[in-house]
Structure formats: C-alpha cells, structure tokens
Image 1 (cartoon, helix red, strand yellow):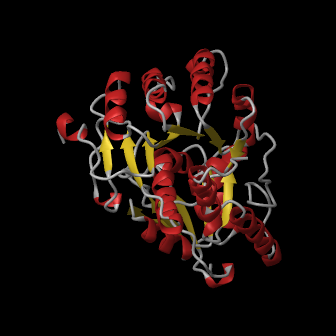
Image 2 (cartoon, helix red, strand yellow):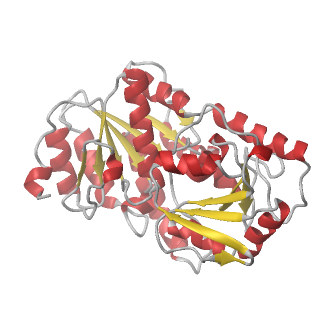
Image 3 (cartoon, helix red, strand yellow):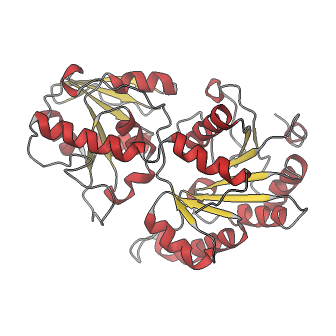
Length: 371
C-alpha cells in the first residue's frame, strides 16, 4: 500500500478512529482489544469504527475481518498529523496508549506531538485516551529506570490534552490523577478478545487439558523460567495434554511425559473453542497486572481454572491467589475449591465484560458522564 493510498480520506465518516500500536495479525493484545471493542460498539450501539496502526510495517491479513485498517507511512509527528487531518477532520480518536507498543524504548514522542497538533485544530474534535501502560519502572541498572521520567512526561501531556481518560489498573489511575484535573478516570479491566461464551462446561466435563495462549514472550516464559511451575500445574490437575495457541516460536513436542500440541495462531472463535475444551489455563504474568491481561480475561470468560505463576514481588491487587486463580506451588484443590475459584473469576469478569465497556464508551459520544 503506497503512502498516497494511505492519505486518501475515509470513504465514509466513522464514529471512532482507534489509534493502535499494532493490529492482528500477529497476535497483539492491545490491537485485539480495540478490534473486539469496535465490534461490540457497532453491534450494540450502532457506532462504527476504523483503525489506524502506528506500525508502518503492518500488512493486512485475513484476521482483520473486513475492518477498515490503514497504517502510518512513517512514525513521525508530521506523518501522523497529515493522516489525522485528512481522515479525522472532525471526529473522535480513541488512542490505545501502550508506550512500548508505539516505541521500542517506551518514549513515543512522535505520537504525542502528532496527536497534540491534531487536537489543537478545528472544533468538534474529541480525544479519548485509554492507558494500557503509563510508565515502566525498574532498578537503576536497567534502561527503564532512566526512561521513566520522560515516559511520565509524555503520559502527562497526553492526559492533559485528552477529553476523557480510562485505564485498566487502579495503580495507573493513581499515576494519572495529578494530570486529570476534575475529569474522572475510569478503571476498565480489559475483556476477553476471543469472545464471551454464554455457557461454559463444568470443570469435570472437560478433557484433562491445559491451554497455553498468547504471544511468543508469554509462552516462552512458561516453557523456560516457569517450566517447573507449569509442570506443577500439570501434576496438580492431572493434565494429559497441553494445547499451545499462538505464533512461533513453536512449543516443545512434550513437557516431561505430557504431549504438547502446537496449534499456531488461531482466529478468536477457534481460540475460544480450544479454551472451552480445556480445564486449566496457564499464564506466567505479574499478578498485580492481571486485570490488563487479555489472556487472563479469556481464561475467566471461558470458565477455565486460571493458573498464574510469578517469581517476583506480588503487590496487592483486586485479584487474589486462591480466590480468583491458583498459584504454584499451592497444594491440590478439592472439586468444591476449583468451582469456587472458577466462579469468583467469572463473577469478576462479568462486572466489566465487553457489553459494560461498550456502554461506557458509547456514552461518551452521547454526552453522558464519563465517571
């Protein structure tokens, strides 16, 4: 696709322009969330959406589902501003802000400058920022420690320029609060991007199968530094097969004596089918950040017993080990305890499912309060 094609105005006006760091394919949590949200906004509220991808290397694939998607010709404030001026002269941008998605160092100066220039233009422009990330942290010997201050400055600029703010974690809301003024900051844990089945089979009716879903990084951790925890989960729940879902690199052929079936990247409906036929979903992820994980959301929505493994510090979270998920090396669970955990995770999920989220965003265009 040439730059000239990219800069053509949209054939029809859209209610929402979703500005995302990446878009399926490949598997990408933020882009998948935007895609699922846009579909629900259209189905439930008649509000149409298109996608602007911040990765110039993105190429269309079958997974777009017919959505209108264009990518930037270059990551620069000028390229972004020209495209927004042409395609969104008056309308609403929903910026799915994941700073490391838009820049490998987590400092997307070009993005903030381009959006600021657009927001200062003609009347009738609305900017909604969903902060999937705010700023990184780490010890002094890591680059993230030295970049944090600049990342916070960029987040502050975006928060001040936005008309409405939302995020997935209370800790992010606390970081954003000094720049929000009198505006409320909604906390919306991310929903499942592989659908929300109306009925999930009982634990005992499912095959003794464990699902491992996600991108190469999260699955690589499971087979690498968290291999012992993965094996512990397989022993605790008598797992006879592991289903690996996601793009390469491929999983091992087996984990000990347990065969691993590599399914590769699948469509959302195919992922849901696999999850509904598994008992356990494994995720090596910081527990305090589970509300921003579309993988954990998919496990909860599909009724799996979620297993979360993490060796670092585990700050307080609205999700608790032993209540919403099982954490190795905890002991085996009685059937009643398994059902209690699955029910608690499901109830938590239903409080912010795609329907709830779509109503909140749809209300913004109707002029309803955003608290």
